Amino acid sequence: MTIGSGSRYSRTAKVFHWTVALLVLGTVPVGILMGRIPESPTQDSLYTLHKSVGALILMLMTLRVINRFSHGAPAPEPTLKPWERLASGTVHWALYALLLVTPIIGLLANSAYGAATPFFGLFQISPLIDKNGPLSDSLFYIHGWLGWTVGVLFCIHITAALRHHFIKQDNVLQRMLPRSLGGN
Image 1 (cartoon, rainbow, N blue to C red):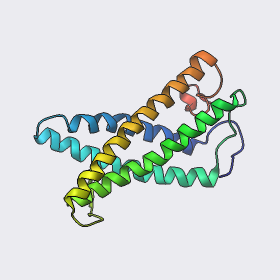
Image 2: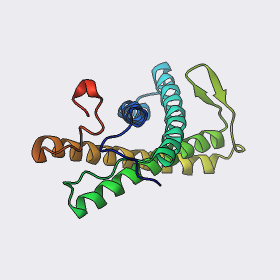
Image 3: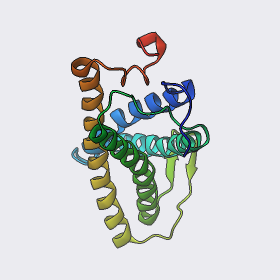
Image 4: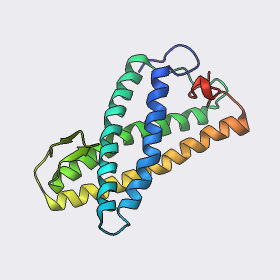
């Protein structure tokens, strides 16, 4: 992967970052809630929404990874200590991987369940594999734990960004913020 020039992320990288962040912020709680409420039209709607958002996250993350590899990223913030660079890189790449793998596992689980995956009522993604109940159960279990892991890493990422902004008062958060919100 190339390192881009400059000290901030491109507008495209920022759009991908904040769009996916908002989608994750919405879909993780929906994923938790949908399995905890009784069977109902509301539960069905939450499942449909969760599947649609998951498919959108997969599409956007695929484009985001392509953009990252083709355009690079700015060099790390110069004020970061070596352990902070390592932690930051680890969390970033873990989130990239999980935000690709988690929806893929969900799509495969839904396929093994024997269902198409809806995309906001616009179209459906046909099952990718044959119906297989035990496989579906295993994949949904894995998908759930990956979702929890995404949620935890998401919280770590947000906490670190806020620490850099409010405690260290460095430029880490501003590099990803839109200019309209004080970014550079």
